[in-house]
Image 1: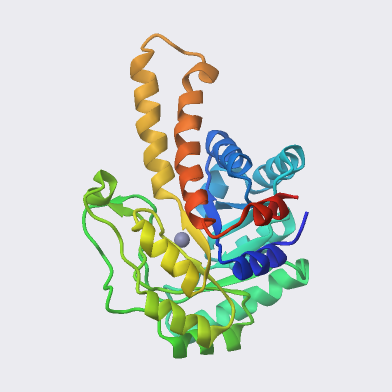
Image 2: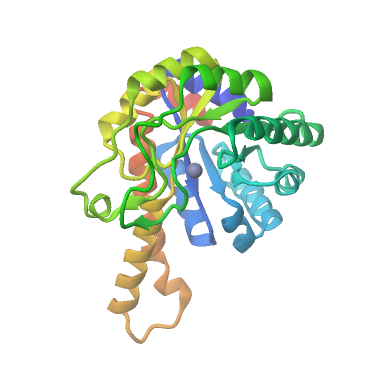
Length: 299
Ligand SMILES: [Zn+2]
């Protein structure tokens, strides 16, 4: 299988982005894999500290390893939002392809020093692992929020992006460009959408010169995704949309079969519902790919 760095470089040239989808159980993991196989594109499976604690860091790594060999589609594994060096080292040892080192809640200088220290630690374990760093505030929690808790006027700047990349040695940068973790109720209902600052993405890309990740993609206007990719976004995180689909379809499946107790009869509609969300996002993120690109991307 090609490395994550090579796949990101190739997709960047082709004008596409990699979809990153969070999983916390086997149903979600199977749904993400099935969607990638269906759309015939590489994919990143992500798990934050909370998701890894529930799933098991080594258990998830082992399952992804088996599934990527079985399915023949490039599947990468990312340790999402990791808040300590110890947890980052654990993910590197377990065989994760990348780690999101997140000290973005700290003041800038402390974020720089803790990120740099953790980048060095995980590269010592696996020199080809990709290290992602995060600047700015995009809120916490991929869940349904009552109100917006962040100030969209406080976007990351090209200057701080360049300074952060230069002084930490990260391979991938996650900026604040109008994105936000989680969704408002109105976004779940589909009456409002998130909008991104495309000009700022382009400025940060030029200044930082590294791969860029868009966190908190759930509920974003489709057109904004396409323009964000053209402006330099390489990885797009979708989590809350999957969680909403998971809960809705689980409730529907349970209520349509009130006497059913067999998990493998209750859970397939849930898997299918999550898979549809992932498939539609993967298709959108790869709209620029030609059929030849698609053949190469999974070949
Ligand atoms: Zn995130």
